[in-house]
Image (cartoon, rainbow, N blue to C red; front, side, top):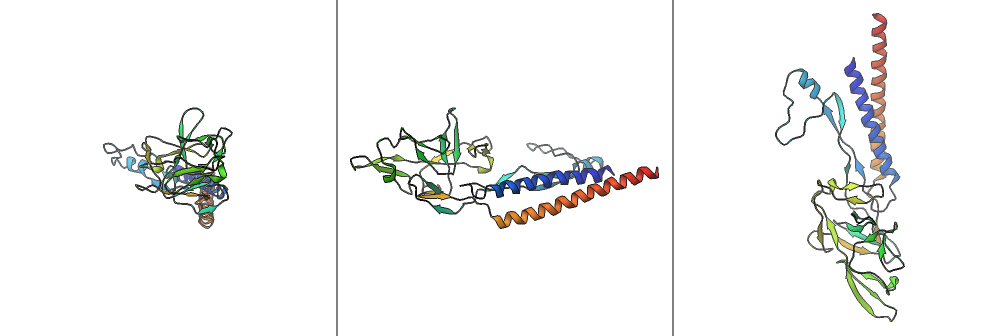
Length: 260
């Protein structure tokens, strides 16, 4: 009887987490450059194998198997598919069409990465995010009229000063990772490099596999509402089935106690 409880309870816990993930995706359907995440499950057979005295020892270099019965949810997987490009009227709005991240310098001296290209110029001409964190550049817009800034798909930036002279300011670099799935997302929506993601590779937009920059555009979320609704209904039905199984197991347990 305990096996029924364990199986059903693991299913309830897993599909509750699945519903939470769908809700998170739907809540961010209008968040610029948001990358949807999805969950996957695996069967837990290791206790049963151990009971039958089969070997469950991991091979050399592999992680120990998860113990238990029922289902186990793998870590959340983030999908980095390209979102659609939306036209804006701001010269400091940038979208990456292809692979690559902008690098952000945080106030505490650490670095983070993002694909959200909505930037602003502060009072000193420094290009910053809407949270005031600096875009990693070797130039600024001091003395430059922001409405005259031109950013090419290759990342070259120029602008006009107060005298109307066009000046080549510098270049915007992009950064990529061997394993984007290993990036760690924080509460502010920025990504940080981890051992799993590998070290960032710097490159010029439009070269060596890096995406091109699109000025006056922002990347939209890659959340597909129709697909999320399908996942929502499937998770709800699976959750209901596991709850019913849990209730049935509880009722059978009660009957067993009455017979005794």
